[in-house]
Length: 354
Ligand code: KG4
Ligand code: ZN
Image 1 (cartoon, helix red, strand yellow):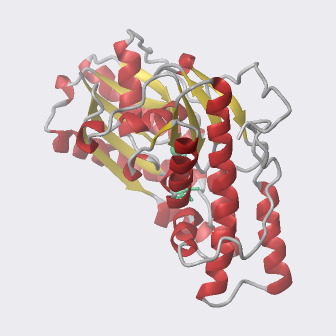
Image 2 (cartoon, protein in one colour; image 1 turned 60 degrees about the vertical axis):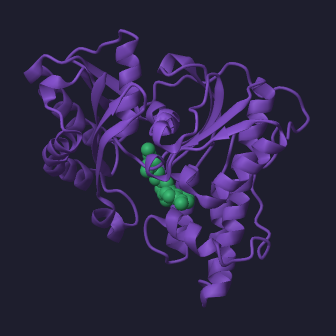
């Protein structure tokens, strides 16, 4: 089975062709990072207009690189939630037009499910077996941070165990990057600078740092950095700047890794997975691998290219829906809300699990 995926939920226009083994025949991403960089964040109107300009060429390139014609495909998958609604509409309308013109089945995909399944992509090439269900996954991106129990590949198989009460982890990286004058997006820049820094230089504290619940809060640490900058100015020189980055990154990644592994322990699940842009973070990947191993849990990490927004993960998640016999009609809508339900089972017990 071969499916074309289309992604336009935020600031990346993506199109990709994927098969049911997770083989990626093409994966084209047109990033808008430079367009939004002067504003320090994504401007929705500019994003929609740029998707409109790029969606046609990106789809054409994805088909060409995959060596396939539209009519040879088994279906089209498109992100229809959550995201900037104006941006989503562009991808959705592109997908509907293409599907309608060739009579192909169309499925909408929850962007978060795409991130959760990105770990299944390109496993044949890496030689590492994909995770088996059920697994517990940490999704940490610019817009979302939550832990999920994943019993299968469809939205109905996914339950949120706990999420952030305020900022997403990627958002915290980006805001701290802005406070430190590092440019946008801050995540990859902080990741790079942190390598030279001392993670113990500044004792940042994270609220909700315990593992009794799987909820997060990242706005407090952002305020701590803001206060530091207000009192002492932006750290001057490579080493002081690297120390702030390393201390901030250590605090954030340690709580993410701890809660992920604690959730797996509590759910009695033997595999953990990460996804979303922050899953590209070097320190988070190390911490998750090490902490999972300590608890006899298998950690499966997505390839770096599959962490940030891309259409290959959307194509794969859509293919899973198509394989299950699911279809959406041409009246498919876009919405800023996710379809993933929260668990009714709150974190139980009063002692830290990890
Ligand atoms: O998944 P994504 O591409 O878009 C959303 O769905 O939000 O995630 C983008 C986020 C940004 O906040 C970016 O700073 C962060 O992922 N990010 C990173 C790294 N690479 C991207 N954060 C920390 N370390 C990284 N290496
Ligand atoms: Zn995303």
